Image 1 (cartoon, rainbow, N blue to C red):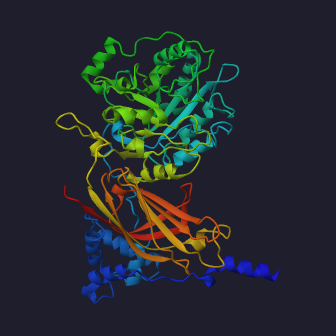
Image 2 (cartoon, rainbow, N blue to C red):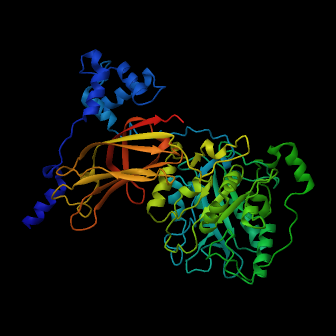
Image 3 (cartoon, helix red, strand yellow):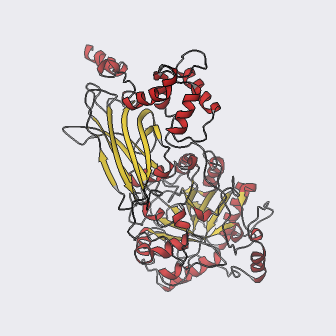
Amino acid sequence: MGYMGDYSMCICFPKKFGVTEVGPPADVKDAFMAYAAGGGGSCMTVEQLRRFLVEVQGDVEASMEDAERVVEEVLRRRNSGKFTKLGLSLEDFHFYLYSENLNPPLLDQVHQDMTAPLSHYFIYTGHNSYLTGNQISSDCSDVPIIKALKRGLRVVELDLWPNSTKDDVLVLHGWTLTTPVELTKCLRSIKEHAFSASPFPVIITFEDHLTPDLQAKVAQMVMQTFGNMLFYPESDCVKEFPSPEELKHRIIISTKPPKEYLEDKSLSNRRSNSQKDKDSDEDTWGRMSPDLTYDDHKSDCDTSEQSQCDGDNEACYRLLRPSGALAYKSVISIPAGKPKGKLREKLKVENDKVIRLSLGELKFEKAIAYHGTEVVRFTQRNILRVYPKGTRVNSSNYNPLIGWLHGAQMVALNMQGYGKPLRLMHGMFRSNGGCGYVKKPDFLMNVGPNDQVFDAKAKLRVKKILKVKVYMGDGWHLDFKQRHLNLWSPPEFYTRIGIAGVPADKIMKKTKKRKGNWTPVWDEEFTFQLTVPEIALLRVEVHAYNMSDKDYFAGQSCFQVSELRPGFRTMPLFSRKGEQYTSLRLLLRFEFVDVDI
């Protein structure tokens, strides 16, 4: 009994076991003294803080009002008394720099241009968004959809299949043991949570395995559920996609128009149900039902529709108030095409038409191996979706960077798992205020004087140098339980830090282990040479050394390098699944050096 009492005391009062206050690093002290020198070195005034924000933190537009708000908030949080014109002490200054809320590594608001066409953005995209676990036997549910939308996901994928009586529509992973969920339930949940994390459009991609009657029923469900939130075109021949800004608070449907689906079915029959068709939107497990029937449909773009597009592109995209039963085809705002021919022909850019093309992971790898520049050119106007190969039955993922590096907008990952690819996905879409849309870098959109586009295979020179200094960290005694780390003796923490990006930029380094304190101080600087800094992601992991087994995981972060704010910044840490810890944080300093070419 006495032993259990001692154990409880260890959990409740961890400061008795090595948690000590750590003062400001030497660099923070030096910065404070340099800018507070005029006041005798004991207090940093509002004006001095403003200069520090501009000159060290890179906040070039920082005003006196901004600096005053910082001082007022720091003094309020520290209970340092009433706000005065005197400003901040050294301890106040360190408190400010070491606060994730007051001094984060990224801007917390949308700051990129959102008025370009959708094809100009990387879009936060999920694969089989309804699955709770593996691809074969897990449950289908609206719960993972809700969770993903709350994280900022903007593209939800639903596989549509008839029920057993062929009179209703279910969402499930076809030809597997997954238990279905009703389409209406998924649609209602999307409506309720679509804009809880971002005002920018949610795109629903349908993998459609339905008869024409059920397609019409889906159109009716979509219209009744979303009402005026639904955005749909009056004409199919769209020369350019609208912008995220134009489509705020709108729901967009993307799938293959019925005529194209008919052609796909006909082709599938001629192939005698071959399992080798990797050009399909569906993966290995999502083949088409053999007993479906189809009606003929009119041409995609008749003469009157073409004349509308030739005159004014706005005629092709209108915000219409739904009235009556609209045909399935009429609710499709982003048509998913399946061009005929070989892979290179599928990547042909049409001057008078834009589409969404889906390629499986293996087909995409082949495309970039043999037609890399054609992929980049295609994605300048059209939307390319890449999805995991069908053999990833455990819901693992591929490296999303290969898609982003070639301009693919919808790099679809399984959101229900965890691992490095999903951490990179989370890191990319923490950018731009976490709105789910990240502007593609200019080099992916540029066309040279000889019509050349970016070639990912070309050898590139170093364009930018990133210097990262890792000062200190804390919060483990608050966020980690006994089962995670040994509270009886403080762990030996070390930090791994590096770059995920093009092969030339990819590297991981690590600090020395720091023993004997729950608030480790490393004070080590690392330098990274970047050839493609616009795509690069900074990876940070903290581990605790374990002599007898695998080292303990103690938090991770990932951020887009081009979004990092220079100067002293406090970086939050996340779990393996990307959930932010309450107290874990690191104090770092970022410095960027441009390299003359």
